[in-house]
Image 1: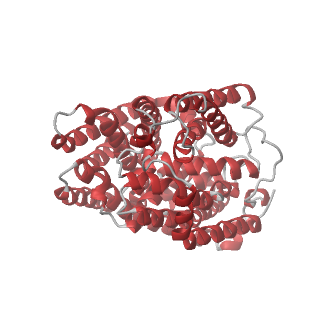
Image 2 (image 1 turned 90 degrees about the horizontal axis):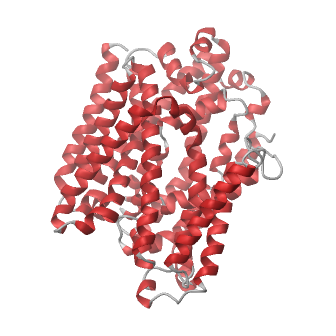
Image 3 (image 1 turned 45 degrees about the vertical axis):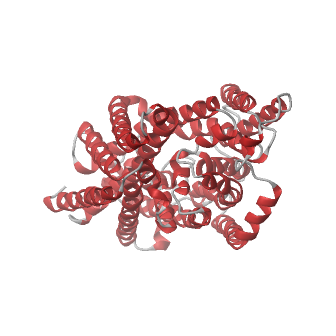
Length: 527
């Protein structure tokens, strides 16, 4: 790193902090802090959602998976195929209810529809799982910053954590969204610059394609059955991916908070349409970056020696170190920081929102104290995440690899709780809790007994089916819910028809886009 590189990074971090300090002037209530007073434009929310998905693991992990990981390749694109269809379900079923109620924590819905124990339990599950995952994500991103800058690992963790906590605490959701817009621009510029340099070094697209085995260029894995525990059949991604994305974008606080911050239901739906269409091209861009840098690695012994077999995700930072000139190198390190912080700020803000609304605010003497309490909760969560990241150590590798599996254990039962509340007017709180516990138990049993034979994406389906079945059966054994619990919290056939009428243009666009994505994947090849 040269002084020019550090100047670029310092300017970027200073711009981020300055923007958040300026936005902090417009906050007066907890609603301003957590959902931007419901005044944020849909396109900014859409870019913020997309930026949250573009973590440092995406910028570094996807290229490494596509180019180097054994059994990897363009099959990563299978993850994206069901996203447009998931957005259709979220738009038509979940957003009209959750955004229509005007909640800040998505788990507030569970108390209005069922009871307080249901809300607190599922909110606690979210806080635990997201808090741990965020600490691990900070550690993983800091490893890359350490390699790219020469800073110590501890300094990298503290620097990234401190900057994120400061601008998140000051600016709240407005700072999260508008810095995400800035970070997305820096990230895209970094990916394009890195890819262009690799393209020129290799000698063009034909040389890039020729450098890789045909199996690595195939985008669809046509395995049969339930998979072999390591590789997934296409239908595992089709079925499991649909459930995963509906749960992630619809009822996970870290993502749903953006739609809750929209000006109205229509604006929230527009943000989801944008993401349903933009994420696949972004993933293609990451995959192309991986193929280009992978081709350079095949030709260059120095780069090959700099990427150890047990740390393949260092491919991109080592490429930046060896081949990117000063100044541009600082910009690309800033892009890595942008990718990391765009995910950290969203997780931190959502952890703070759920903690305040679900556990702290009911105990406050005055609602006027909620804004100060929200900032204090954000600081506390920031400190906890930094401390956890500092203590992760050797545990990080196994945990990072298991994050997606942990999500698959929980997302099916979590979605079942909301789906039964929105679609089944007979569903009751105690039955929902029993269903969530049964779905989680079924997934744990499946993972421990058939984990080597069933790919983990199928757990999304098993958890959902078991939880819905148990909830439906037990709810019929209990007294029907009170009419007040159903007011505005359920979706009937008439509401679905109205939603379809209002959104049919967007739905048709997403369905066409889903077909186009599938066509591109199959055109790229089947193995």
